[in-house]
Length: 199
Image 1 (tube, rainbow, N blue to C red):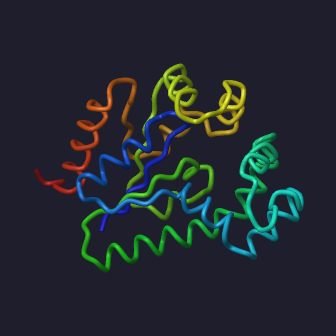
Image 2: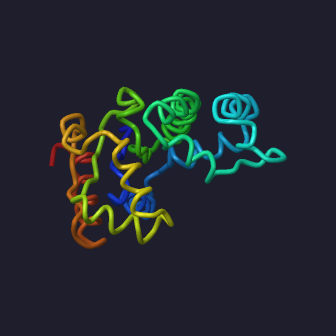
């Protein structure tokens, strides 16, 4: 089974890519969704996050996402602290997802992970796809969909690995400056090449 990792910066189009793959019957998982679930429910992890970022991060056991984001994304050190707590558990969950899909006989499964490369998880995948777009395009998309201010988006972008560095570490790159249909066609072409390499 081919383990495909999909990564890219804020506003690049990763979520749309995952939707396209799901429509093609490809088993998909979202590492960011896994992380959010773990942060909200795993008691041991909640204790560690509270210790690092403040007891007020959780109120009556419920996570204050805005407050955690404000503190975790305020600087690189805080972001790396949060990642060091969350990423090992996310990696375990991703490996479990791949194991289950392989047992079911799927030829390919995909995981979207925005910080796949930053987390040092490249070895968990057979192929890594970078979906990218020009910064003004990514910024406009993020402003439209994320509910964050331009300042907040730019701050998060600054904490991510530069796009040019990501390009060097990925097996495939899709430039997503166009329409959703163009992204879909590029993904279908990539799937064809991955699943039928001899054609």
